[in-house]
Image 1 (cartoon, rainbow, N blue to C red):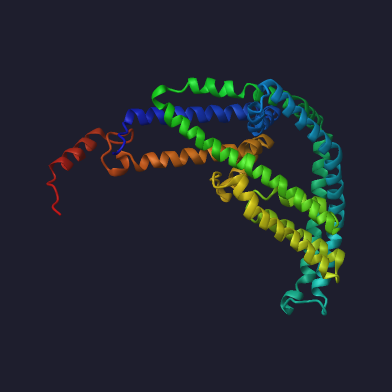
Image 2 (image 1 turned 180 degrees about the vertical axis):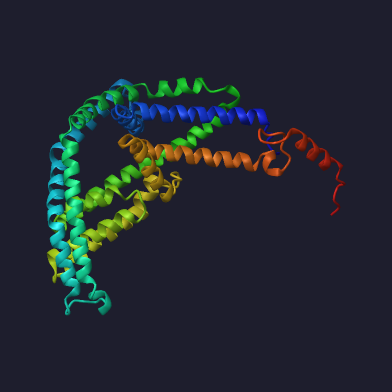
Length: 386
């Protein structure tokens, strides 16, 4: 049976949600400079809520579970901040300095007559590509270095980092402690005749967001550790950096592993050639990582509950990042998941409505008399025989 949609109710719903969206955008634009620790704290609490529920089922109170989780997380983050992050930054600086030399050596390796497998017309263009790429790398490295220096030397960045490290754990603690009560309170505000629909939508949004943030986030972290350890065991220069970057961008299907594979094989050719056995070992690290991701991690951690197309995800990241900066990057994935669920719900309701079946009542953009005439003419038509 088709849903009946009246013009007044449709107008009311459209105006209400447009006003809510406008208020949300204005709020983000007005407070985007101070929202980072609060958004990060909310994201951290959402990520750790299942762990708190698990500890509660094991007999701990909500307060003790929250304290244990936050202390453990802060300790792990502190260790990473003191050991892992400086090592990655050091490898990044060395890699940026060595990249032009690696590119030159790779071009010479490809263009040399005894090793060249490229057609002659492509070999003749190697020198021009080399010059253009070298100039581009020089300009890009200079711009990136000056940009990072300006950002780091600005007092605001230091204040933001301090607030992120201090305020975020506090916000995460209180939100994680009161998570269930907050959800129950919001549920009590829902109109009772729409509570089933809203709960179903909230469940689908939670599946989409948690499937990506918890599932895909855990997958990226595991892959980053696997690639970093595997490449480091092979003995590849900058293996920790390349593996970590490849894992962190694995949320885009095939892109993360492909970028990491190209970077790792390029460095391996420069480092190990002509001992191609280590080059093959480098490639095997990524092939094994893809096998583990596709057959073990993806089904177990993510499954089919994400529902975010990679193109839509990349658009959301770029759009929210351009509008709201780093805060926009944090809310891009949840917002993309929520919009996807709402669009699918709206389309499903439209396909079951009298608008779709052609028997709609007066809509805000319709002329009332034309609608009444169309309804009368439909009633006067004789029934068709089969």
